[in-house]
Length: 191
Image 1 (cartoon, rainbow, N blue to C red):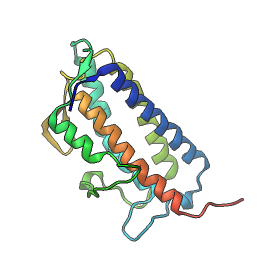
Image 2: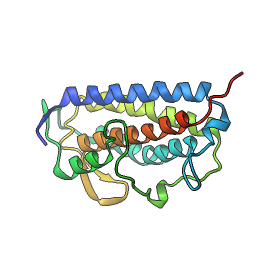
Image 3: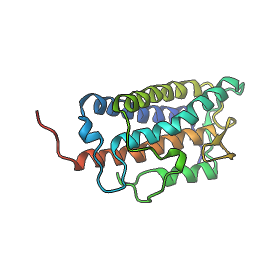
């Protein structure tokens, strides 16, 4: 993968993050609980479970990345060169033409239960998403290539911060497609 202009990358990730924040706020404010708890098949996740799945990743990554940003003394570089492994992880996560082509099974630590509280799950996601957006702003002042982040499923693997931020965004996009499909397939409540 070719080098990217770091400021443009972070701006793109911020725009994606703002879009998701606004969409989930709207879902939280306007979507009945019955729709958020409905699935599109036996053993499949509902919208709340998808959001809780994203919360599990944020619980790991945001506090960790915040600490790493605070400790970093390396100033921002103009360009960011994605690593081969980080680029691969991001590419496998990204939806293609609005579809998730390659299905993956979530790790046990990231698999939510079916019984979830709407206000708690949506509220927590919105808090994390706002923190993620603030973190992207902090990252503008740091070298997102020099900071190494241990990944949640195998802490001995450390990726460049820029790769982790791209992966988180791709993972969010992947699950946003899932939420759109879930809510789009279900009948709209009237009244």
